[in-house]
Image 1 (tube, rainbow, N blue to C red):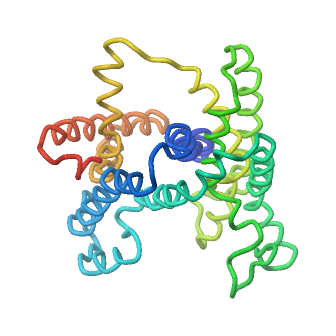
Image 2: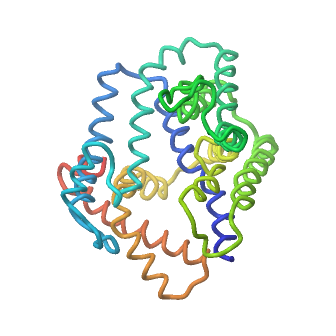
Image 3: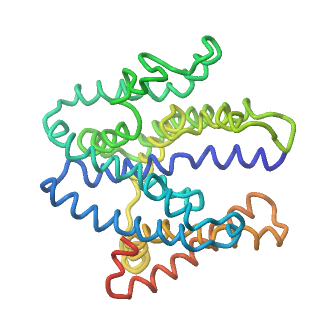
Length: 327
């Protein structure tokens, strides 16, 4: 039961991590500052080549705890269509590449659209963050989660093209262009209530839909329903993402720590993410043997995983051609 509490408390607060990356990427990159061909060439070297290399490594080399049932031929075959089961964290890169594909298409629109026009888009997108919950309601009422034109022969409903991570991309641009710098007092006055409301929805739904018999057993549909409010493009997560971004935007960093730690860390952070599954399970099992409480267990495992990958990535960054491995 205590693990269920900690899972609800901690994970609900951290679901904004992925949306925050998209917002930040858009804030820095969108609309494009150079032509489409140059943009794609830079993204290909920075993102695609390391993705291919690490996908092959995960397909060929079983990491600690994954040897049972490891099938290299099946893993390699699956790579033609998707990431393999031993590298599930790479889903994020596929999503990010999809956002990058949309940036050149939407850049001319972002440069010409009015503030009200962009707000209209964001309003429609904000409504689509309710869709995960509306699907649950539709399934309860009609027996089907399909909404507004969707059917088993057509997955492209009315909101298909104005939903998902594209909204976070537009949101990053809106922040940079239209949201002025605010004092800490004004920032907190907006961000804190927004975070409280978003967190209450994210954690509250998860907790209320969780079965009370532990350990939870049953079909995966139980977990899917529980995690409705955890979906990255759901209302509560979007609210906490905006709140976090408002606070992060106020932070500044300079001096030797910034030059010697933050900047070098940022330069290899993609590589740290790509490789971390190779050591995560090992450290999880190691820390489990120490008998720590759940929150401390999570924290220590995360710290050990991060710093071990950081050190390895830093060493690899000294090797010629490492940008193809680390991005």
